[in-house]
Image: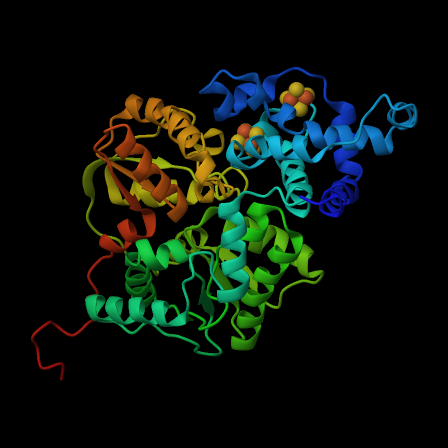
Length: 431
Ligand code: SF4
Ligand code: SF4
């Protein structure tokens, strides 16, 4: 990297050290509890993976720039500026071994939001040219093509036509004035298109008016993952423009963890204004429809299931009861893993880790934590509500030779929709 790029990164770091970051570094009591909360530390035993240690470049920059001792030390040449080599070395700790799962934040006794600080550090890493290649490529594709996997409208349309034929229901695109706009992660479009069919069946049964936008349909926000406020803002803007053009009342955040955080919690701050619609997570909507009596369910799933809590939806999103209420209604044998709910362990691939080739070996290693959790309950199926978790868990189970089926909660709910008594009988004349 050039000296100018390094300088840009250091300036970005300096600019991202705000009052909370300064307060967090000042208040750390070095108790080490955050280490025990992080699966990269617990599964490797390597102290370099302690969350507070991962933040060392940010701490050094804070000390050098914003503390009296640090400034004096810098003047006397005792505290050296960060070098390009040091930042390059840190990419492993900032991108490969942090899923921004938020577990360390939850456990810190003095309330340090370590996840927030990791995000700040990623801003400096990205600006100094040290973001991982997989994330850089995903970001480029998103800006140029609209999606990190290169999924464009023709690919979405092809999946929509296929699903329409399968479920026998229309999938509305670009219908203005409806109540709900659905966005999807490209992983759902390509790998799990059954979610589209499940939505069509549920919304048809519940009388929900909805649409998918032809532009701004991508939910994934790689800007949040790589550490680029500008990219994050652009991705949010595309969704917001689509929703406001179609005059919808709600945008439904799909089965994708960080998309929810990006759109619901960070989006208005990124844009600097409130939305003219509300953001609702799919799990919240299903629970709401159920409470209103618009989601009649019948029958019980008889396989033993457990639920993997996606970090961004449950721990950082607060939607922990809704999926459980739904699962309790439609399953006979729902068993919780140890540490379920807000204390759940990450799948190991969130926060952009799944897009980082260099992280693959470590990601598989730390999946041992999920295996321990699963070994306590012996499920036949694992249900989750995030396509990225689903993908990572499928890969992890394969690596550990474990035969457990992984399914999405929305699809399972759609399977147990009660028959519509008012619908014309199949094979009847319909008169
Ligand atoms: S956010 Fe999660 S993965 Fe990242 S350091 Fe904290 S506990 Fe570890
Ligand atoms: S848990 Fe909080 S106080 Fe303890 S070492 Fe980690 S950041 Fe510092």
